[in-house]
Amino acid sequence: MSDSSPGIVDLLGVLAYAELTAFLRLAEDAALFAPTLNDRAALGDVAATEYGHFRVLRDRIASLGADPEEAMAPFVEAIDAWHAQTRPKDWYEALVKAYVGVGIAGDFYREAARHADPSTTALVDEVLADGGRSEFAVERMRAALDADPRLCGRLALWARRMVGEALSQGQRLAAARPHLAALLVGEQGEDLAEIGRMFARLTEEHGRRMTALGLTPNG
Amino acid sequence: MSDSSPGIVDLLGVLAYAELTAFLRLAEDAALFAPTLNDRAALGDVAATEYGHFRVLRDRIASLGADPEEAMAPFVEAIDAWHAQTRPKDWYEALVKAYVGVGIAGDFYREAARHADPSTTALVDEVLADGGRSEFAVERMRAALDADPRLCGRLALWARRMVGEALSQGQRLAAARPHLAALLVGEQGEDLAEIGRMFARLTEEHGRRMTALGLTPNG
Image 1 (tube, rainbow over the protein chains, first blue to last red):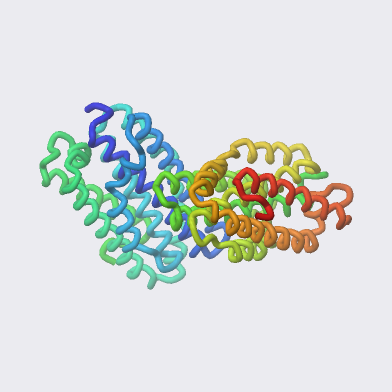
Image 2 (spheres, each protein chain N blue to C red):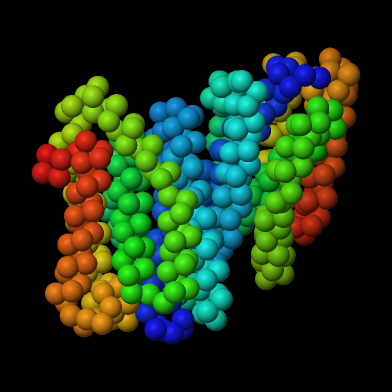
């Protein structure tokens, strides 16, 4: 698959806009909700890392001869809609959103790496290499659940709603951008069942993250 | 002057909280006001750079055996008050705030470097080395003023108000934190006239930035 395939530019574009927006939203959540300066700095750290990912992706788009703004444009509406539907109302919702959101983004990078050309795979490795910053959310959530087990049901529902909205927007994009879908699921690009299996893998990974946070998927 | 002087911890604390807050506010302004995705990314770049500065300062505070949260705490009220009084209402005000705010922060680093111990001076150099990201504001403002010269008066007043509020909060802090004042003005720590001269230098630098933006100080 050539570097300049429309699927590659779509993939880089959706990830770039997702990272730019995650950066801005996480920074806003840190400013609004963090209960201590250390918490604000920790969530800020996750946000700044997302900006670093954006920078890598934007430079890659430009190096392919495409315009980053144009590459991102088709995905603005879906990603903005997801954030509008998943605005945290408190620090715990912000923590779960950071952990779940960064995790889902990482899953998409891994799916992309399964079928992309070697230079895109190298970029994916670079982006994933500095991961792990959102792990602080696990520690904070487990302490919060120990102190107040009643948080569990509300936050499990919150996480499920976030993922439901993400899958819904993702399915819509996969239908609207067949080149992108082809890149993510390989040879069987037009095979909706293969796309379904990819989303099933994403959902399984999400379940593992819920367990790590102490939130059972059906809690 | 020893590494663990209260002035040094105060200096690192006020700069750390200023950078953390600048990061979060710039990210918010980028999300709210940027007219294009490229503009959003450019202001996001300034924000992420501020976060990098915060990280350097926080690590330095910890390496001195002080607690970063405690070191920042005395300055939260003044810096939050400044941001509350200087919320941009549009993209141009956000641009001017980014350029003026990052510039004033740089001036404080330079003042600190005049009298601090060598390791703090080295840290200041590190923070200043990756500067220049806010320069994009100059280009954008000059294009905007060419298109609509009437912007000049409003934005010059806006910039003057921002600096007036900054000097007001700064004078209050200098009175409340004598160790910090001593570090910034050297031997003449208790000399209010020397503090006044430092603020005069900051104001002169601000005037140069206004000229660079195309906003005359008394416009």
